[in-house]
Image (cartoon, rainbow, N blue to C red; front, top):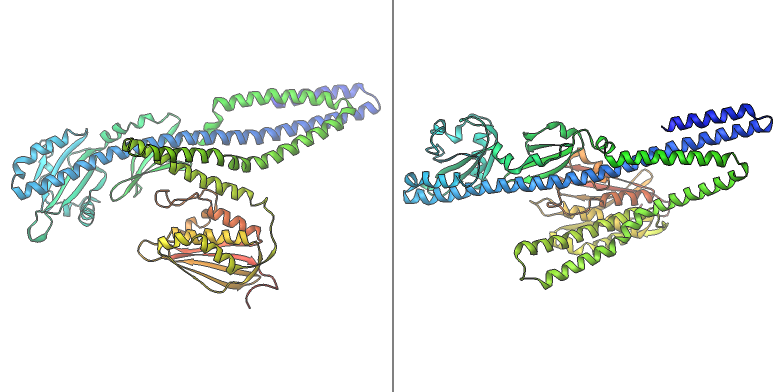
Length: 552
């Protein structure tokens, strides 16, 4: 449509050209050139604005999809936990029944009660000495009797029992093809008491129909424009479409006693295609076309009057300058202005928590705590966003700074965290650098804080800070003995909001290393990482060497 308008204006200008003599010819040529420039500008603006708006719609659709994924994951977690609780109850019953000698008589009655508790229970079994001797209902499950759980040749079956022996908790295997037919989930737990000579009595198990579990979760709630795939931690597909994994999915983790499942959800046709098909995007296109035609008309009339050309250009230039400045300030101001309402929300939530302590039920008190915790996390996120955006605005102080002093100040800020973690920080002599003390301190806070947070659970955290010269750089190494970083993610960890672990495992905003890298680059250097999973990581901060600084 814009192309039609362009042709109309060009054809009109061309017709005028043939009717104008002398200086009029040159004037028409200038009008045509100016009109072509306006058309090109509108086209570029359309491409830019449409891209921004499409990304905005993508963010909205992803937010809605994230809520859907969280709801499904919560329902699935509840459904699985409800069934695992039946296994634990069966274990307790068998322990008591085996000691009293009433197990053969009472097992069918108790198992029938469990079978009626939730839909989709295929069978309930008990295996003294890990050989199935009791199964309910017997009809249709005769093939299960006599099965040696420790010698089951099917992949993963015996391994599940071995995991149960080690963990003494419920383990789950599946989805699997069952002896009695169909797909199901097998949950087992070892019965520790009642064995002879200190040995385990055996194991119990319940087979759940997979389809019943999925029907209970109601995956039909997923909107038609979204696809999903549910996988085990081993990558086995439980339900859904594996093609979702190729479309930048959102993921939710379902925690099980000895493993986890992952629910991924994404737009079937891709997020950008979904945004382009949105009614609001199509309305935007129509509105932009009308606006573009109006601008083209106004521009043509304005360009035909030479005396208004300069004032129009000046006005447009000023508007573009203000728009650019406003765009640069918007993100920073948004993060800043949200601090106050967030503080009010957190304050009132904390006040409500104190005033209503003991008056509300446990669930309501939990909601209030979630509000307080969420406000705290959002406050940290806004602080980091503001710090990241302000980095280019804050003046750079090029004065000699003793790196040891910046390290000392950083350790003072981290003193409580270091003590709580039982970590040890060992620092060698550091050089005098031409830098900014605040930035250098913040870099130390991020790197040492990460080393403390991602420490290894089986050994005391030890962090070593040292200095070395390499070519034209002073290099400060921050070495830890933590969990390390997978080589595939070494570059990604410096991206904004990039997290390799869930917030339940390691809290944070996902911006620390991005801020540190931006600060190091502002100081004229760079930051690298060398890591071995399970052994530890070394973050190296390269700062340009200056003749008056550094250690000899």
